[in-house]
Image (tube, rainbow, N blue to C red; front, side, top):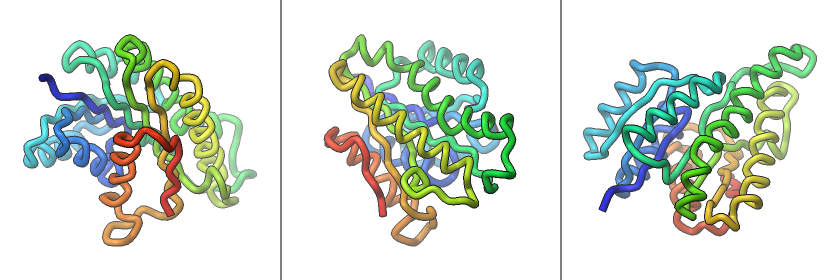
Length: 216
């Protein structure tokens, strides 16, 4: 029986890597998506050392055409995506009055629009299979926005709303959508270590009950 496939968009060294590792050690094939091929090569090599079947594709979450090409390549070479994890975000500080219309759109493109576009690439196959999972990385700024990270607060509010509305729409079609709202700064060796947070993505995938887990 062919292993299921997880695709992680925004495969950084923290949550993205640990989520990929968690699913990979539970018999998933893994595809990592990021802008930096050198970083992807490093992560692919490390995950492969754990016996995880791992592949990588470069794409920019800010560029819809780039994401479309990446997912087309993934489907052609590795098959349909069983689990999508969107972990990309524009992590830049700034008060509301430091933003311009263009800069806010740039933030929103990565934080929210890229998530929707990625989801739209996998939803048709998941509907056809009447099964699938889409998970988004959220943050406490969605619930408690902060003046110093205005654009990110707007973005996290947006991705939370996207997750919950998609969950309602897609549940009758057999697709589970959820978001892990991380209410703290991700720090190795603490309660907010990426390894512990990754467990919540797996828990959400297995249980398929709560559409939002607030990790605090």
